[in-house]
Amino acid sequence: MQSPNNSPQTLPALPLLFDIQCAVGAALHAGKPAEFSVQSLLSDLQKFNISRALVRLGHCEYHYDLLHENKILFSIARENTCLLPCPLVIPSAGSDFPSEETQVADALAHDSGGVWIRPLKDTWVTEPWCAGKLFKTLEKARLPVLCPISQVPYTNIAAIAEKYPRLPLIIIMADYRSQHIILPLLKTFRNVYLSTGNNYIVHHGLEQLAAAGLIRQLLFGTNFPASDCGPAISYLNYSDLPVSHKKLIACENYLRLLKGIKK
Image 1 (spheres, rainbow, N blue to C red):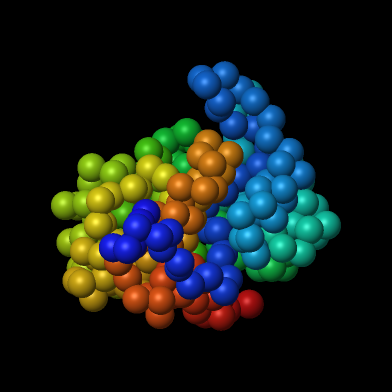
Image 2: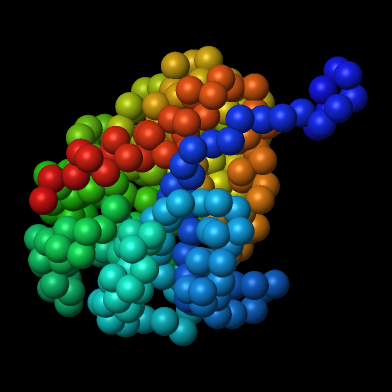
């Protein structure tokens, strides 16, 4: 980007970037299962000057032992202090998993910065008769819940947000064509947040959401390893937002959610 005098534009450095949308382990790369090491994530964090990250463990079709994989994730975070774990949770409605209280207590005991859900893949539904106990337990702890849009449609997110108003819900992997859904959703439910990571790259999308009074509901994310970290940083840094708003998105909004977690 060039300034009017044709010299390169100098942008103020963001003091801290906290990536809330990234993963390690198994993932799909070019349509095929691939492994992305912790070291590859750490290298990218250092390369792009990202201070900390909320990390999930990538799951492919051949991964089914969810509890064991959460243990792996906790071990990764314990060995790398710049990473906060984001374990997978699931309702215990079929009595085939530990209770909701046990899962949430385990997440809190390992200093998790949130949890994530994937009901379609794990074969459960978000209605209260199936997942009510899980969401109530998460709401009591104020644990942020990451909701991949391919797994939790916008209508489901709205229903959860309305039923559990003190539960922070974070939309990740939002479709760049869904701004007309995202804006009224965030405006209606102040406990719904949006990750700015891919696939959310909307032309002047951040500016429009900020103008609607939603700046405190926007969180920085990259979608590593499916996406490179660079575009997400450029999208934020070159936006027409004041530096104070960029700082809110870069880290301050998520740090506020972290402080709200009740252990």
